[in-house]
Image (cartoon, rainbow, N blue to C red):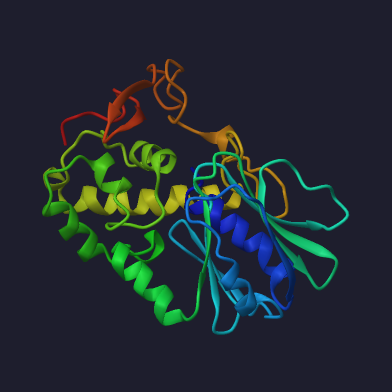
Length: 274
C-alpha cells in the first residue's frame, strides 16, 4: 500500500499540473471502487477550478473551492495526469478531463482505493475526526510522542502502524524506522526510556524524509503523479531483505509476523532488550 512518501510524491507531482485547471468532463467505469462513485456528485464538480492539493496521512485532498475530492490509493492505486491523446490503460476507473487537453486518471487494479466527493471542508474534517487520524510524523511533539509510548503495552511495530497514533506510516517505513532507531519491533512501547522514544521519533522523520527525496518505493504498482517510479526500494535496509546480510553488521535479516504484518529486522542491531 502506498504510504506517506508515495502519497506526498503524487501530491507534489500533481500540484503544478492540476492547480488552476478545471474539470470539463468526468468518466467513470462500471466497476466500483471501495466507495461507489455517485453521478449526483458531478454537477458539483464540473467547471470547478482546482485551488490546491494537499496530503493528510495517506490521503490526497483536492480543494475545488467549497467542494473537495478525497482520494485514497488503496493497495494499487495510481493517480496521474497525462495527455488525453494517451490511450487509457486497463483498470482506469475514474477520469477527470481537464481544460488543457490533459486528463487526471485514477487507475486501480485491485479496486481498494477510493475517490470521494465532499461538499465542504467541514464535512471533510468530520471524516478525519471520525477516523481519529493522528498527527503527521513531521509534527510529532516529543513530549506527546513519549507519553503515547509510555501508556501502551503494544509492540513498537503495532504502534507505528496505528494511524490514530501517527498518520501515514505503513509496513515498509515502520520496519525501516525501527532499524534506523536500533529498536526491535516486538519491544513494548512503555519499556522505552525518553532517549529511545526520541531516537525513534527522529528515525521516523529521517526515513520518511529520505523516502520522499527518492520519490517513494515502487515495488509493484506505485508510480508518482507524473507516471515516474520511485527509487527508495533500492535503499531498503531491512524491508523485503529476508536472509540477506545487514548493511551494518552482516547478520542475516529475519522476518516474523507481527501486528498482522510481515516484519523485517536485524536480530543483532535491533536487540529485544532495551
